[in-house]
Length: 319
Ligand SMILES: Nc1ncnc2c1ncn2[C@@H]1O[C@H](COP(=O)(O)OP(=O)(O)O)[C@@H](O)[C@H]1O
Ligand SMILES: CC(=O)N[C@@H](CCC(=O)OP(=O)(O)O)C(=O)O
Image 1 (tube, rainbow, N blue to C red):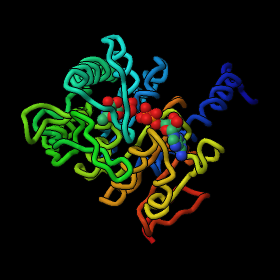
Image 2: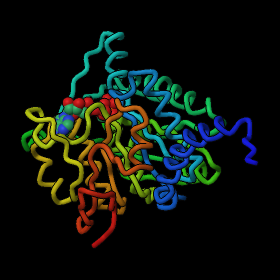
Image 3: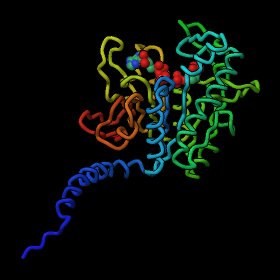
């Protein structure tokens, strides 16, 4: 006589819905193995930071990376937030060669918005998940030192105020936080190596420099487009992978905010970072999709000599 368990139907239904979930988790196993213990620098851009749901999903992803055994470091921007605050103070925002012309008065606003507003908000969102995030700026513990940067416009050296060029990075404090299981959240302000004040540094540039100094495996730059467009603004075809040399050839054709992003990616992969990626920060959980699945989205820059295979994720494998 066959005895049917009274809950047999229910059990098989549960198994039915549970198995696909297990498969999804197992799909992540090779990536978990590959990235375990690796440092990932994530730049969260001002334009991707305007939506509350996206910000909350970003925080979840970063905390997920941390619990999955990676060492995430967040560098944040805040261009639109700075411009809005300058506007409230009756100050105009002017950009030259993609960088904000930063008067002494504007510098106070930049510092207040980045360190006092944007960074605090991100730290708060991350710390909803536990005592993880610690905010700092490049001023803290000599993390970033800079000297005055002059813009180059048509061969001319142009004074753009308190914009800094990073000269030195002391990763001690960030490494200590990472070793303690924390998530550093860094605002792109540098201490001045020459006059005792502070400098405004583009956040993409700061993230790339920090990724190199930390010996990071990955630099991820979140923004408000799908990735690097091959022929922007005429086409929305995204370049999914390219080498450093291929990117170098494209650089003169790039415009506005993409310039410091792609220069940062190039600098990173030329100085030891295994891969640098530009991702669409408007897609919820884009970081998880990029790190733990086959469905890499956005643009990946690899060092010269890396295998570029459009069909799989052979990131950073040297031929
Ligand atoms: N080739 C390109 N591909 C994609 N975006 C480009 C390209 N060239 C210029 N852009 C512009 O760069 C912008 C991204 O830079 P930015 O606005 O500074 O972003 P963020 O605030 O995230 O740092 C895009 O929204 C787009 O307008
Ligand atoms: C020198 C310079 O331009 N600094 C930037 C710093 C913030 C930033 O880079 O923010 P996004 O990443 O959101 O653009 C600025 O003042 O806007």
